[in-house]
Image 1: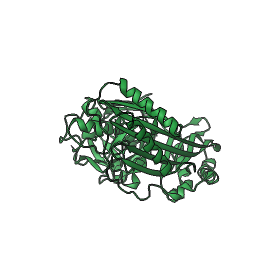
Image 2: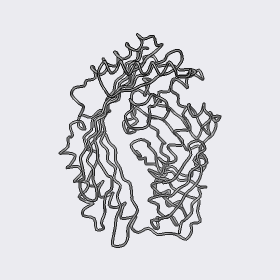
Image 3: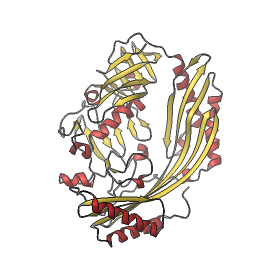
Image 4: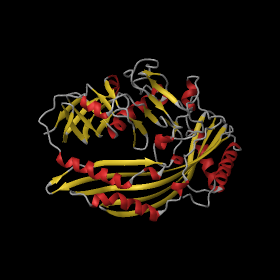
Length: 462
């Protein structure tokens, strides 16, 4: 799928040229980062294929250190003259930027090998096959008893090339690809209109996805939302978080709290909690970037060229480690954990590394099946998605829940609507009463089981 005019060697050669040019201008250190992305996407609206998109983008970001100041610039013009201009711009910015304590680039290191990160099977998929795949998904949607319609839905294959070279000996390159899909759908039956559901998949093994079954699941979830009721009240503080409800807010708040940039700037509730209990003793949270099942965060090096590694962050409820990039590690005499990020999603060459996130955040499974969680609940809710506000700094969240079902006397009793939930993520972690045996890859990023908690505020809106 990659544009044939570029090769690994030609891009690395340009990166070395940019670094050498910048260092010839007297900077202390220089770095050239490139990212190319090819995305073939088939979109669906209603019950039909709406459009096809095939987009290729590529660019370089150049970063320099000059007299303890940082400069960064980027370009999507890939030739030596434009890289020279880009390097000059980065040097000019560094010349007027404030000094930054602890600024440094990494030295060369050995990178792990991850088999299966790039799939020739995915790379060989072209438009005609993608159209056939979309038709397989749409077939059960068209045959549904109710009128199920997709909105802003798509399936895609995506290929990424990443490379980084710096003046301290770093030279790293990787390519990866993936097959994914996300469907937003709602059902209608006469005057009854259900709320939208979200259903997705992510894989590096296309043969592992039963597309017709995926379409049937879209129908099942959408039709379930046709029969929702509004309760007068609900007398319970028990909730079972699933899928998207774990991603937002739990996964994002936890991931933010363990980044050293937030810890050092007093934006983390856990800044003084290292080696303390922050969750129940059955809760374990790791960064697992070498496990191919962990989705889009599987990688061999981070966004400033450090090798990635498996990091144990919370073990048996105890906060074991924070995550570092080079800058924040230098300030506390530590080493980078390989978690530097140039932003979540999108084209990474447009940003310098400035964030710290788990590459492949993973909540390890517990010992309860989802069925057992439900059977052990006298009154509560189970839900798929949270739509509201949350604060990464203090963990507070409140909003409406989607895909909610009432759990009563150990059984799922009725789909619900107009249910709100509120609480604090850091308190939720201390009030977990069940962790599921099975895990899901959520949004292609967070791996987690269902989580049953007590002590949340649940209310109804008539």
